[in-house]
Length: 136
Image (tube, rainbow, N blue to C red; front, side, top):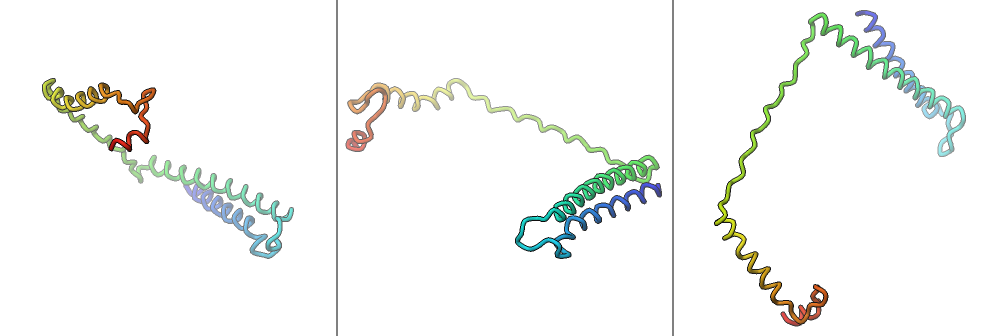
């Protein structure tokens, strides 16, 4: 268990070292302001990025190993997620055919009137906007 803690601390220190390598050219003034990055700056920055990423991956792995060890020893209890009961579907209200007919009757009548009034302003199924406005 101690090895895992030491590994975690070493990985965290690697992350910090990588972050220092990334910011050191700017913090120490070796990178001129408002200029393209020099070769030294690029080298330090991307080396630091690599060290930080590897250290972060290592820290995550060591923390996962510590967690697993604690679970095996029984010091940490893993809670099981409780499955939420699925809500029962609400049945749709059943409408009788008479109710549907009474609801749809105005719509059918409006469609019938629209089709029967082909009108003088319609050409190829489209109404002229000027003719429609004049008739209002």
